[in-house]
Image 1 (cartoon, rainbow, N blue to C red):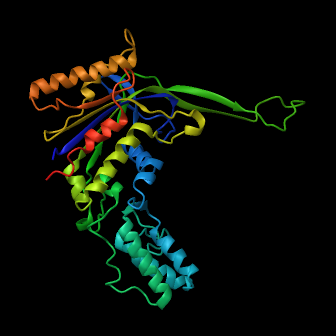
Image 2 (image 1 turned 180 degrees about the horizontal axis):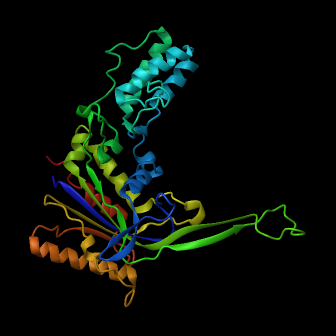
Length: 358
């Protein structure tokens, strides 16, 4: 089985603010001495794993990422007739299995129900939690030490298998991510712009006050983004307990979401949904490599246009590296909407081919 799948995507977004910094400004990066728009890998992965694509294709195999496990358990116990104090005490015991609880701001005690860090809970673990909670409601008994063995080494959560899980308090139940995602960057230099806007008060007749009911401003940018993913297919298969069918569906869902799902930031304001115009899919056992070096010199729109020039720059750089190292994928699959060549279906088929080989 060819171990690695590498995906290279070009997606053009119109004016947007898909991923903001702490000041509300689109995230940027300085690459090759030029400012580029940037979408963080965290933003991309969250958009993909919470998408309808994942929900439809991986129903029953998606985990829950939360700090609020204790709160949810406590509420369920209380609704089931358990006294509030008992419910909170028992809920803390369950939540503490998955991580340290937040300290109270007042006296440093762990009265709070929230876990300090976000924890990714697999469907199997959620089932075990639900069964334990129901048993506590039925019997009125506190959970014992054996009851609290809720963590699972073997999981069927596709998102955990792809993006990993870290439990600082119990690293034996960690999962190494099978998928690496680079921060997406524009292939050309950009300038973040300001949008000044006003809103009108519908009940203002303009008889006395003719001013706006609200004024504000937001920042935005537009560009053609390069996104790179690398998936270790063997690790993905191992993370999913050798379930080949689930591994194939997971890869398919990841590729479709990467091609079609946009981050949700400011979508209501900008409607900047977009799909990839170009996808290159490579497979093989050689050490993977990101091809962003092709864009150290910002791509320009002269001649055949920005998208065509960008595709050409990527293909030239790929040929150079393959010739230098002699380990490229000569049969790589490509989807190029500019030339009406290839399809998403073909990309997925190439990425999943041979996954069931020994």
